[in-house]
Amino acid sequence: MRIFLLAALAVSTSACMLNPVDGQTVSSTTGVIDFLGYSNTGSQTVVLEHARGTSWLEVGRTTTSATVQHTTADGVELYGWSLPRVLPAAAWTAGTTGFFAKVRMRVPGAGTNGSDFFMYTFRPDWSSCYEQYPETANFISYCSSPRSPHAFIYTRDFPAGVDLVITSLLWTSTGRTEVRVRNNGRPGKLVSVTCSRFGSSSVFTVNEPILPGETKSILNAVAPSGSVTCTASGTNEDGSPEANTANNSRSQTF
Image (tube, rainbow, N blue to C red; front, side, top):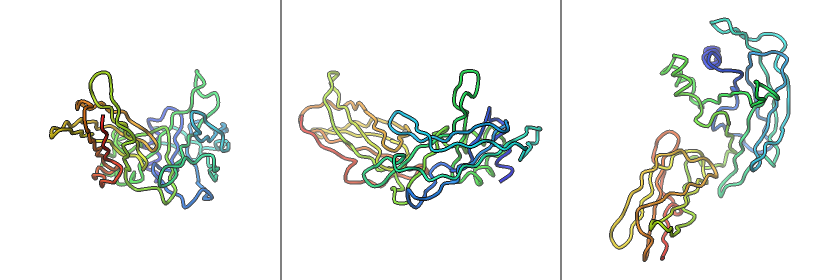
């Protein structure tokens, strides 16, 4: 763990949140989550917030330690903070098969422009990732959460894969079919959208991350004429293909 802390903080501009890790699960909204991290400034206020729509609401606040808890190999002194909290019900957003919450750590007035602290969140397999990428720059590049500076926490019953749902097929003035794909599962990647009509088909390659609750609008080359059927495919965070569900394909007659 010590190597992890030092490698992570060696390139951090201000602070680092080490727990919870990206994708961590808790048994219910009554479970206590130990939010913790390190800063290079002592006796400094740290605020934890959760997202609610486009707003951020405070969960709690604490201060970094007054005394140094770790010193990096290059002499940077680190001050720790810990804030065990139960996320309130308002922090959780309902999907079709579970709930998710988004949180962040912020230092009021940090930096010359009063911006949020820069923060890393790491993959659950950070230790094995560190063995593969021990150099600091590579460790940050390959082992941190792709959604930094946000940590995503899930209830235990949240689906393990990417639950892609095509919510609608629309006609566009450009003569293409607009496909709206929503992710009702955990983070993953929307790989492609295939649409067909009258025996011909067109594959639009996407290869973009898609977050819980996020909807992406894809313009497929198939013209919206007659009966059009579109299917979305994706992968889980580990790169394994998502199992097809009843909702990732949709037909529409234009």
